[in-house]
Structures are given as structure tokens and as C-alpha cells.
Image (tube, rainbow, N blue to C red; front, top):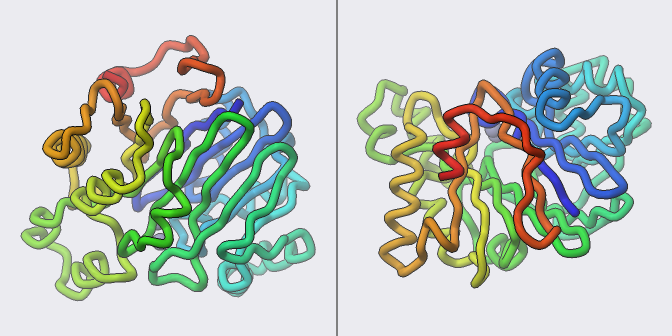
Length: 287
Ligand SMILES: [Zn+2]
Ligand SMILES: [Zn+2]
């Protein structure tokens, strides 16, 4: 069994909570400590004290904003690349004091946290040694891939055939080009070390989707240069054109900067949910 909720997603903050039968993991802590705690409780009934690991993708503030508070309130080890931790510690002296509990992660070298197998892989992004992760338990797999300029064949082979994806669909290229960002910022976002566009996400999916039902959470959407409807439409039409049915085979879900997604359970036969009420946005997204 593998359960996860996207606690926050977007350029204002990113975090994911994952649990298996035996362990609980936080992936990034990019919103305020207060928000992080509230959303973990509300979506999964989980507390910081119960965490078995805190994993980091990279040092950008939208991924580590609440890290200091999390570390203060739990004893879980931190998993980060040498480069990521170097940058985090350089920017935050309180975090630097926690260096003793940091496990150094290397791209391509898998490791286990209890019954959760973790594969970090390198991504092209304007950070110091950034990674993204694939998670596997017996019977369930999830890849979380955001903050990358392009999807390499190497990454595609690592994330091939997962049951669920949290995948970056950062911007609509036309909205970004026509928008009010300075050209230097546009160039950064569109560049090799920037972010995946809606089209990039669609093309990547076409190459990695398993031949069965898959759940895809479109993530890290730009508030300025994208719309949830547009991201969904772009991805579903591209998949549809290639013969992939977005109602039957691929279920697209929204993520939000403002609230956590419903706890999603993988690996127990059909999808199961926790039965809580959920808001209109996720209702629509779950279709
Ligand atoms: Zn980010
Ligand atoms: Zn980033």
C-alpha cells in the first residue's frame, strides 16, 4: 500500500506526504510550517512527530520554506544530495545545525526507508545537484517529477510504468511568451534548466505511461502563466490525439497551492479513498 497527498504545489510552495504500511515520508517542505502541519493533519491525519524521513529535491525556497520548523519538531533523518544540503545549510543556520542527521543522496543510487524503495534521479534545473524521486512499495509505484527544464530519455526510463505521477505542467508556452515577466525570466523558465510546459508534460507522459489505468497529478502550475483548465486540456488533447483515453486510462488530477489533494491510495486493487468529503475543485479534477 502506498498513500500520498500533494500538500501544496506551485511556485509559491511544494510539499508531498507519502506513507506505506510502515513508514511516513515528507517530500519537500516548501510552505510555512503552520500550513504544512495543518494540511498534513487535515488530509492524512498525520503529525510531524510520526515522520520517518524528510526528503528534499533541491534548495529553492518553494521547496524548503517550512523545513526549519519541521526539523525542530521531529527527529527524522533528512535525505538530500550533497549540493542541495550545502545550499540549504548556507542559507539557514538553524538548518545547518541539523547536518548530523542528513543522509547524502546520490542520483541513480536507490535506497530504502522501511518498506519504501526510493530512487533519486538527476534533473536539469537551476539549482545545486537537484533530484526528483520514484517511490515503490510492493504493488504500487509513484514518481514525483517537478522542477526540470526537459525530460531526458534517462529520466523516462526510470519513471516508466508507474501507477501514479505527480508531474510538472508549469506553464503554457504562449501565455508565458505573451505575459508580463521580464525576458530574462521567460528565458530561464523556457530554458534547459527551467520548468516543463504543459506540452512537455504531455509528451513525456506519452513515453512513460503503462498500458493500464494511471493517475496523473499536474503539478507546479504557474499562477501567472497557466490555468488548471488549460493544463488539463493541453495534456488530455495531446494524449487523446495519440489514442490515449483521458477518462478511462489516464485520470488527470489537479493540485493546488492553497490546499492539499485528497489522500490517494495505490496498490490495493482498485483505487480507494478515505471517504472524506472533498471540495469541488478535486471533484471536478477527479471527474
Ligand atoms: Zn519549485
Ligand atoms: Zn526549483
